[in-house]
Structures are given as C-alpha cells and as structure tokens.
Length: 120
Image (cartoon, rainbow, N blue to C red; front, side):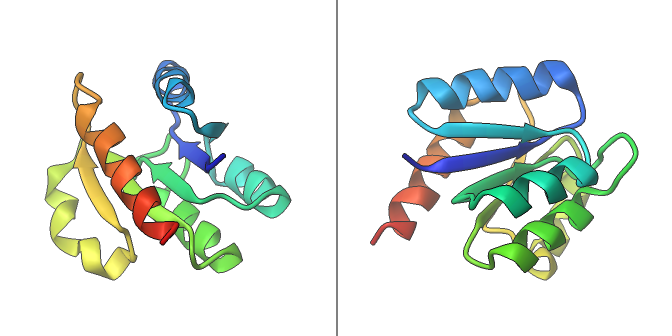
C-alpha cells in the first residue's frame, strides 16, 4: 500500500483529504506544520506528499525541503490556493502543482498518475 503524507494546516481540509485518499486505497498520515512533518518523515517513508504552501505558522516549502532531504524519491504535489507561485514550480522540485478547488478529481488523478509511474 502506497503511503501519502498530507501537509495542511486547516484541520477540516486535512480530514477531508485523508478521508478521500484513504477511500482510494492509500495509507495516510497528516501534518499541520513543519515540526509534525519532521516527526512523521523521520519515522516512516512516504511515497508521495501533498503539501499546502501557506501553513499557519510555517512555509510549505520548508516542509518540502525536509521531506526531500529524508527521501529524495518522495513525489511532491503542491496543493494550494495560490496560483501565482506556479511559475516557480521547477525550483521547488515538485512533481505537480494543483490549485485547490471543491472538486478533488484533479488531485486524485494526479496522485494515481505519479504513484503508478513510480512503481515502474
């Protein structure tokens, strides 16, 4: 079973993504800030991380850096409300950049595509 780390500061969003992705057959862990990311990423290996860029007290880029420092093969999906950061996608070493919406179809499809590719 593929493991996904959700990095999202808003508890209702974390719960929603956890529920949706669990129903898709993924093992889910969730973090609200960089400290939680450090603890979780140090304990287990994740195949993919869904990261919000604007965390309450932290920057999602710090979370991405920490995740990739521990496991450079972790796929990264930036999932944010801020389209203006998309132009810098290459500098962040992210595999995908998705603008948040009420429809989770794009997020689910992107995760399946990235994880299917990683198993080849």
